[in-house]
Amino acid sequence: MGENNAGVIFLGEKVRGYLMVIGGAEDHSGDKKILKKFAEISGQGKANVTVITVASQDHQEVGEMYVEIFSGIGVGHIETLDIKSRSDANKESVAERIASSTGIFFTGGDQLRITSVLGGTKAHYALERAYRQGVIIAGTSAGAAAMSDTMIIGGEGDEAPKGNIVSMAPGLGLLEEVVIDQHFAQRGRMARLLMAVAQNPFILGVGIDEDTAIVVHPDGNFWVIGSNTVTVLDGNCISFTNVSELGPGEPLAVCNIAIHVLSPGLGFDMKKRRPLFE
Amino acid sequence: MGENNAGVIFLGEKVRGYLMVIGGAEDHSGDKKILKKFAEISGQGKANVTVITVASQDHQEVGEMYVEIFSGIGVGHIETLDIKSRSDANKESVAERIASSTGIFFTGGDQLRITSVLGGTKAHYALERAYRQGVIIAGTSAGAAAMSDTMIIGGEGDEAPKGNIVSMAPGLGLLEEVVIDQHFAQRGRMARLLMAVAQNPFILGVGIDEDTAIVVHPDGNFWVIGSNTVTVLDGNCISFTNVSELGPGEPLAVCNIAIHVLSPGLGFDMKKRRPLFE
Image 1 (cartoon, rainbow over the protein chains, first blue to last red):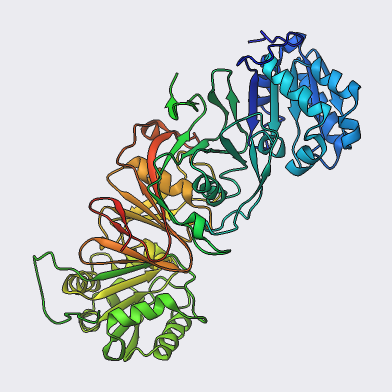
Image 2: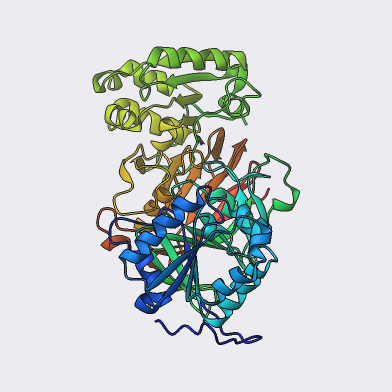
């Protein structure tokens, strides 16, 4: 795909880059299918990739690990960007580094670190512009959660859907009209995604399993890659819910959500809300 | 409701009793909402309840516990039936005990113990007849799973839906056209119920949370009681699935299952497959 347009600005136009939203725990040692796809879309040998470790506790270690992996799979140039504070995120040099990238990769950790440090800074605007220009922005785990307008920041797994089960906060806003959840099947997170969709059926719920990703194309379609599944919850036809009356711990009712379980190779048209098969 | 008809036989007629299918871990020490409802439908002070402990490892202890609870909430008469083998299950005295009951309660443990010991015995036929006559048959956990024609006997929780994730076996056949899963949200069992429904959308998938139950009425409607939720998966409109081509570990695709999350007080019409609100 390497037809990225870093450097050319399409301000105000609908042209968009790619997003790769990874459900966490992507394969690092086997066939590395997901990371190889990121490398390919970034431009492979001609790629200039930036790894952003702001979500991670151990910035340096995580950054070095991804540099090593991306080198090993033929990415031309890789740098880590160690953004520790909002003043770092407002540095011209940081915005320039983002602007010069053909691919940007957010590591995992805490999604609130990403948004509280980057939100509204020069780095954030540089990311938006890069994405608009056609660059791919990828994120795994917390880096995945942070991509949407509103992001899930907390909520126990393996619980019944109940009032207060899910905590949300404003995300980076790269992926609109969607709420992402990650480590989806592996951490039993159906309840919190159901709750998010019941709260506002305008939002598409997208639950991404570990070692699985969606690649969001400029046309608004996404395609599934990896080894597990992506669960889409479409609340458009909800006929009844008690969500607006729930006190803490009170059980949710919500009727007639459509669920699509997508295996790798399948896609989804987010505008028309229907699965894609080729 | 105590209008049970134990003793009067409606052979060949559609008249049916009640089923109470409990998702496990029902409250034993608080308001005991679920067990009280069972006591009420069984006939309360005039009830003659049989506790069947065949699923449980520690028959005696579990039996004594339920006898104590049911006594405490005003059940007139309670006996435990300790069926250890198929020859026990073929005893005339066992069939007679079942026939004289106004309520029958299956404890939890291993659903294969229930079916391998009772299946096709005099006890099994006595249960079917009692149910047809209007008696309530309740089961918690394994006792819940065993009620349907086909029952889930295994499958890891918190896993993506994949080939071979769910193991099934023939159940007691009291609840037709339904597959039950229990401890549903608490053990992250969405994947295995999705798989069961994808395999045959004729089957309604009913996932019951802990301390939650459905009460199946003779008209084919069920109503939710307890403290959590019941998740219904209706595969009637499935537009695509790869389930018939899956090898072990290969990810499932299935599009357009309708999901209903029902809180206590709501019901479901299993024939018309639609939620009920009163």
